[in-house]
Amino acid sequence: MKRYEKFADEIAELIRTGVLGPGEKVPSVRHASRTYGVSPSTVFQAYYLLEDRGLIQARARSGYFVREHAKRPLHEPELTSHAAHTTDVDVSELVFSVLASLKDPHTVPFGSAFPSPDLFPLPRLAKSMAHALRMLSPHEIIADMTAGNADLRRQIALRYMVSGVMLPMEELVIGNGAMEALNLCLQCVTQPGDLVAIESPTFYACLQVLERLQLKAVEIPVHPREGIDLSALEQSLEQLPIKACWFMSSLQNPLGASMSEAKKQALYELLVKHQVPLIEDDVYAELYFGSHPPKPVKSFDREGLVMHCSSFSKSLAPGYRIGWVAGGRYAEQIARLKLMTTISPSVPAQAALADYLQHGGYDRHLRKLRHALEMQQSAMLASAARHFPASTRVTRPAGGYFLWFEFPERLDSLQLLRLALAQGISLAPGPIFSASQGFRHCARLNYGHAWNARSEQAMEVLGRLVAGLL
Image (tube, rainbow, N blue to C red):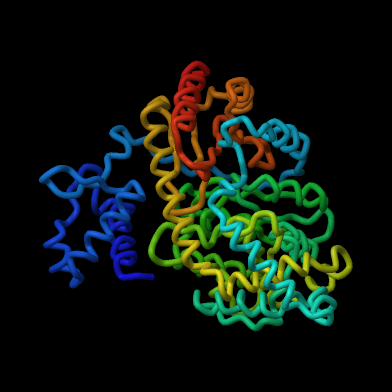
């Protein structure tokens, strides 16, 4: 990272944490140069970058100021109440009906589960694919089908090492996206009828997996900023025979919540105490907005109790379907189960990603991607503050590409979805994120697509629809 980019990230962190508030003046070029020990040209480059990211704006003869993203900021949702009980999962029909309604390419994709493909370096990936295939020997094609591409596993292990997790390559199992990895992990540690602790709200695919495997859900509430309610989890672990936990400790979908390092360590110690394995879904790990990547719970794992799952689908190559799991004590069992089901993900896709990670400038791409998402989040938050009723609550995640909106309880988000689709706008209604089909007055919106006049108009229409339902 260049010096001006690092300095820009430091100023962005001050804005993000509220040290520099909307409308406040940022340090002058001369003051910043003297205080931070950088050249005036470095400060100028940093401020130009922050302008491009939509965080600051220049005023004639006055300097640079933090943009007033929202003159009337909306409040944050509150933690839901909790009672330890089990739920039979039966949400697939609702989920499939909602997902089917979101497929129209002409709708504004606020309900999408993916960011815009325009944010990914697809032409560069194609070059890596061509180069990797030329270099791939017939022997490697067969060998990689079982263990996974050695170069890719090495690159993934290196990224773990940089984040402070020393991981032997033997622990890595390459799969068909993170969903296969998560499925395999759950199958390794549960039997039909077992209880699994999940977040509430949670990603709807997690609910579908539990339903398919005939598992029961124990819903643990999630604070919109701080993540899992540990006291509620401890109560459930003491009262119920929970066999596994499936959590997202960073940039949780749909809330965007991220646990602190101290809280992640406390979560791990609690699971060690009860000897309950954790399936850590960490697919958004690379999409953080701050200057420091969040550590996974896996970084505290000393007993192999954490199965850490991730993929390149959200950060680099959505159509390549390459994911992995660092399986801990369960790695061999996961690998065998994979061989009994899908055998291997695409060997060419693995080779292409290995080549890109080595030569394609992945970290440079990630910085560009994070900056785009951060700017688009600011735009959606500002638009919501302009157009949505003042009673609306919304999350402010430090990464990812989702916002979670909470409306007054009399609003029905399924009805809102029907009205919005008639206006050419999609959204993800709250009930698909809950085993008990709660959160009926909530919705998840995706800001992962370029913000333009159409996006702004869609938010204005949604605001009117919400007001009409209250």
